[in-house]
Length: 193
Image (cartoon, rainbow, N blue to C red):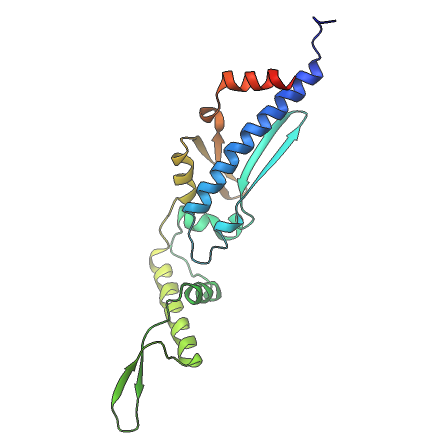
């Protein structure tokens, strides 16, 4: 009996060890992406999560964001000139606090006095819309620059990758083998058996 190998038990140990290692790599990448992602509203950075799936045929771990297809890839790869919708720009300007500027107040005597931090809601809304419109015009002329925050995260961890296009969107396909130690992996598998 001691010479019999339980193949199912070995296979399960291998799947479990592989999942543990891939999840550790995925969580490291998730942390890097959250550190490097644009922080205008922090909703993009906070939306990245790591998910693992094990099947009979393999193990897959993905780090992604539900916002990637909506707009997350735009700051990553930049955009060509286009007419951007104004509402997200207004939200961005508001959340960045770009409209918190000084206000010139005119008095009946005709004198102007600069008052810091005191603005009316109407003035502030007009200022926000004006700044958002200026950004919209710039995007229409030159597009947006690439920030490559995910690529920076991948390279910071020393992972190799390839860029793939799927259904019109760009994704990074990562090879985790550079972060995996084959001997330690096998030792861990034998401990699990």
